[in-house]
Length: 372
Image (cartoon, rainbow, N blue to C red; front, top):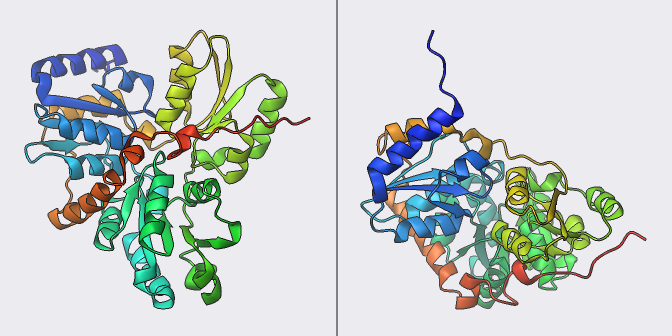
């Protein structure tokens, strides 16, 4: 019986293949990947930023995206004609993205516009969604947004039409609406399992924001009780969370922002400070290792099992079959419409892209809330 290869042997093989392929190979690693994967990547970051970097790299022929499937789709949408996108584990999906099926969204759109008219509603889809949903927004004049520029996308949307249909993450949508001062009664949740999403015709007419009933299982594991407990244990600490968390958790935290913001927030924190982070545990653990001069703690243990499906073994297998297995393709018509929605996001303003002050969750820091 042949002994299975250990992680060090697999990593060496991956490095050998990287050396052979040189600049033709780009390995993209999302912030939530385990450390042994991130260490082998050419770029690390969030899904949209990684896709942009890959598309801009003219020498890169083979893009291997270590993340979940919608991220690899985004890379394919933005890719150049000579580039091939692969994912080590095709089964690495996203529960939240799956909560908004294109057929159900089309049905909801029909119900909403029959009450309000299509001229009064604009769809905005979170980057964490399938290509078909991005294309839906492209066809209906809408845009894509990230967790960084959601406020800018909302402002743009209200400049275009009276109402916004936001999907698939209700919490990012609600936190964005709260930040913009939209009253709670003007934000309704659309439950696709119920007639009219569980709303009345009158409430749909009065609503400014219609939030899809979707959520991230990683970030909704955090509760207000976790924040209060950590406040009691570490009264000197700052707590930073992702805007996919519930509004209760966000309101109790010191800062809220995207994964990229969380990384920078920690980097800018004073030496010796205690930072408690509410996001996926692989990122928190890696940040703790990379910042030994600061105390980095997780708000609560929350692992994304889909991200965890990417491992050294399937990464090596993908590289040994470069350009041949687990190739991610998006139909040309879908790609065209999805790209239109992405282009609208990029065209919002320089602030929307660069997340300057006032345009993103990156700048949203609250006065510290005590429990005393």
